[in-house]
Length: 284
Image (tube, rainbow, N blue to C red):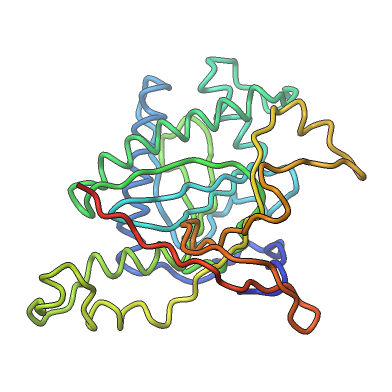
């Protein structure tokens, strides 16, 4: 468990690490799904390509960029982060809303909502395309700040020749998703052991994952808020959560609840004393 949050990524266009074949295949699915949805909306082909390096027209990170997290569950588990520069958000929103393309137009909340809905449609297409390769995958879109986890791979989705307008989106895969792609694509060559046949993980599978770094998060509580209430927050504002002080806090591994316990202080840092480990419930 980390003591301090990971600082925001530096304003650089360099990729964190070049994606390997598994990550490239995964992102090719996303590129194809994005091209399919944009082509349907535009009424004309809209080529989208996945590239490990930043295209020439790529913009460096800005505070105004739209950042979304696409969480995967099911056959693949982990997260993908997308950074969409403000000009690209506006262009995508105008296309989605059938507005005339105007780079100087005023940016409105409706534009961000339109792009988030567009990405949900892309995620639906991607989930269908992923199934024959990796199995049933559920994808959930969340907007927010830059990811706190260290990326396992990164790259770009960029418009190809003949696209209606230039488009460059930066993506990052969490270490958990990166490892899940590799584990699903490269199972151990030796035969399945008796333990694996009984539904228990074999040593061959575990060895693939032992050195993977995963983010562990403490969750003190949650609250659903209206956008207008969030916009009214400022210094001194108090957000009441859905949990009492004496209740145990949650320990999440890559977004999945694995344990509960009480908060303690260890050498001036927060810690967690585990009180309950949660056993996964087998599906019927």
